Length: 406
Image 1 (cartoon, rainbow, N blue to C red):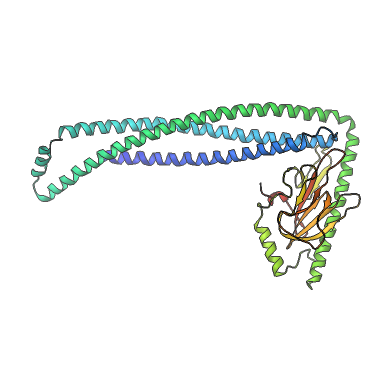
Image 2: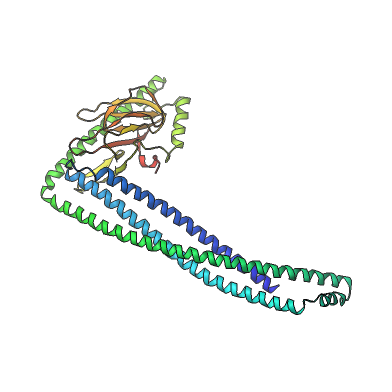
């Protein structure tokens, strides 16, 4: 019975270790998925920002592009390091498990060999019969018969346990070899990524050094761009407030809270929109986020603060822009000295698409998810195709990155 309890403890220990390894493998899969996403993003960055040779980009644009590239490459190196470190822990864990399995297997084989010898010595049917007949009473004879059956079954279980442990040991050795190969590959990829990062950083430093003499001129241009962006932002905010007031007036409600009064249909649409947070398709087929939502500092002049009301997506030339969800065209915005924009209402949510060159819709049109509503503007000066995308709830700005699918 002591041997049997020991055997159960060994099996339980192995099951616990297997669960731990399974959890580590799940973490490895998650990291690999993140790494593939970053690799895809880097491919998009190179294709969309670094393949146009004809146009001469401004210093500000080149620094923004390089900064995005450096950031993505650092992210790749970080994730790859995490993968390599996790593999190291998994390899160490597997090596310990292999040592433990070998000891368990030896113990099982020794135990099994002892049982075989003992069985051989008492294998004659006559000795078994005599063992039963020598019982003092029927109850004792029955217990001896049960013992003989249990002993035979235990022998069989030990034989199966040896087979299982041998298979587990073989599988772990194969897994260990693969893990070592994967780690070797990751380390080599990381070395390549670090070399590329060094080149990108040098290029970034060289560019920053070359523009120091023209910093005052650049700062003036940055501030001018900021003023233009603020003007467009104010215009869009004014139009949103007008849209809320007009909608509520039409519904027979007067409110100054800056919120839409919703009909049952509009409420259902808003609920469906909210339920799709983090699942909305992108407004363009291919793109990378070049400017994130919220406050920050200019990459070329840290004294200038920027506050993006949405995100800016770099995309391909003349790309069609798509509605991210069912809704109604609230307004086609014609911006003075700027490019048109479209506001789509989804109940009390709004999505806004700026820097367009062509418009396919008009105010009041109903649109479906994925429907083309216009075309992004492509600059003839630097070849950039940049879509501005915003999400509002009533008159409150939201971070669009939390709404789009990753």
